Length: 250
Image (tube, rainbow, N blue to C red; front, side, top):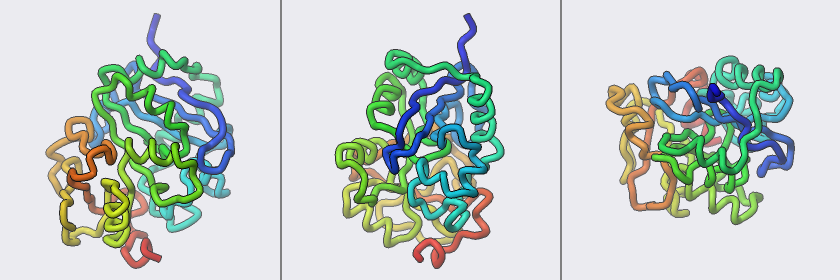
């Protein structure tokens, strides 16, 4: 039997606002050809039954992105191109192209694989138990959350997710706040900005000459060891022209 390349990991309320969301894993049968991440299982966290572009235009992406300042409804500086991966996954969902995964399936999907939490969408929107099952037998993972300072999220959910992923920050002040709270972080900066203390350039970035992929680096795997260096990367993607420290600190 041919192994499916994608599966539904979770369908239910968002941990951010209670609205219906769906989580799909892809790259289960075929290698990912993403040159930055390398061969990783990709996970898409999306508003349920709403086209990603429509969700971003109406603000319904809040169920998977929270109050992230990079949403199209805010600054519009998000690097994710919705018409590519998210749109393709949604289209397959509309045609019932993915089956539901069991808890045993979750472990098998991540077994001996590297996993990307949140190819689109914030991992904080998904019950932490889903991610723990997916990562139980994995070789490693990456993930980021802009919701690390959100006080409205259930405490156990917040703590569990922040152990697994990096705090996404956009200014030196946010970086200091994240570090003070015990989190490692991933900071987007303007090209040429000085690195902060205990911060390194992303090895999978153009400014580091792509000497590694996310798969071979695996540094963005959370705050379990908060003494480890945090990561900085130059602003990139479709929203880069809109990005400035003045804007993101507003």
